[in-house]
Image (cartoon, rainbow over all chains, first blue to last red; front, side, top):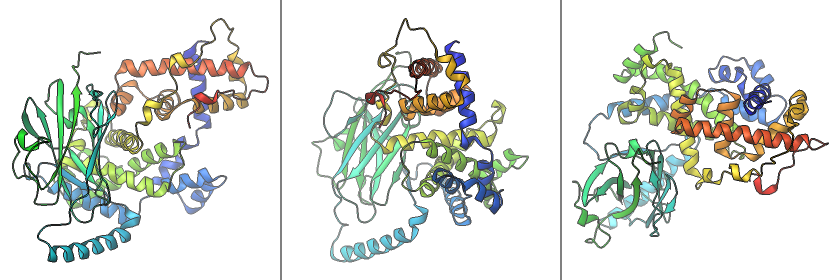
Length: 259
Length: 215
C-alpha cells in the first residue's frame, strides 16, 4: 500500500470517528434542533456536553451587540480621522464586571483628575514580537529579527507592567531610511491596557518593499500622542522628553523571490 | 440562507441596519460552527468553551467589519466560493491567528520533522493489516494525533480527514502550495512510521517515545 493510500484509508477512518463532522452540530448553531435533539446530542460524555455548549446558538443580546458593533465600524468611514483603528475587546459574560470596573475606574480617574492636571502615569509597556521565521523579545537587542515572507503573519503584543487604570491610546508607525510613515493596523486594547496587533505582512505593511523596517508603537494617554506624523528624531530612544512611550522593534521583509 | 446573499451584503455594507442584522443572523452560525470545531479539536483544556467561543465569534466579526468591512468586500462571488464559506475561511484564519498569539510561539514546537521520525529503512511494511481492524485504526489515529502539534493536527484534519483543497488551506494558513504538499508528505511518512510501529506490537498499543509526544 502506498503512503497516499494509507493516508486515504486513515482519512476515511477518521471521518467515521469524527463526531464533530456530524451536520447536526451546524443545525444546532442555526437554532434548528429541538430540545429533545439537543439532549440526545449532549448525552454520553463531557466532550459532547462541551460541544453542545460551544454550538448552542448565540443569544439575542450577542447578536444585537454584533450588529451594533458592525454598524459602528461601517459608520466610521472617515479615512484620516485616526491613524489607527482601535477596537476594544469585549467579554459578553463579563459585561457586568466590566461595567462595574469602568465605573470604578471613572470614579478614580475623576478624583485623580480633579487633583492633577494629567491622568495617572502609565506603567511601563513592553513590546514582544512573534511571527515570521523566528520570534524574539523586542525589549532585548537581538540580531534575530523576524523575517517576514509574503503571507507571513506577525503579532505585536504590547503589555503594561501592571493593569492600566483609565484610557490609553496607541499609534503605529514604520521607519525606513529615516523616513517615518504612519501605519494603520487594527490595535486591540484589552481592559487591562494590554494591546495586540496582528496581521499578515501585506496587511501590516502594504506597499512596502523588501528590506529592514523599524516598527514604532506610541502608547500614551488620550491627548498626549502627536497630532502629526513625528520626525524620526522625535522617536529616537535618546529623543526629547515625551508624554508618551515609544516602543520599537525591527523586522525584515524578505524578497518574494528569496527562498 | 437568503437566496441573494450578495444583495443582502451590498445593503449591509451601505449601513442599512436591518440588512446588517440579517447578515449577522445568516453568518453567525457559520462563524460559530467553525470557531467551535477549531476549539473543540484542540487538546488543551478549555477554560470555558462557551465563553471562548463567543469571544472568538465576536473577534471574527470585528475583523470582518473592520476598515469599512474590508474583509467582507474582498469576497468575489465570481471566484466560486459562497459568502458563508468565504466567511468561514476568514473565521478559521482569525482563530488560528488569535490562538497563535495567545501562547508563545506554539507552532515552532512541532515535533514532527522528518529527521525526528527515526525511519526504519529496510523493514518490511506490515502496516496494512491495521487498516482491516477498526480497533487498530482507532489506536493508529490516537497515536498519530499524539505525535502532532497544533499545526500538524490542523493540517491532518483539513488535508486528510476533510480533504480540503490545497488552495483553500493556503488561503487560510498563509502557506504556499509547496509547503502544504510538503506537510502532506510528512503526514504520510508519519502514518507509515506509526502504523509500522503499531503493527510490530502484538498488543497494538501505541509505543510513542515520550520525547515525541506533545505536552
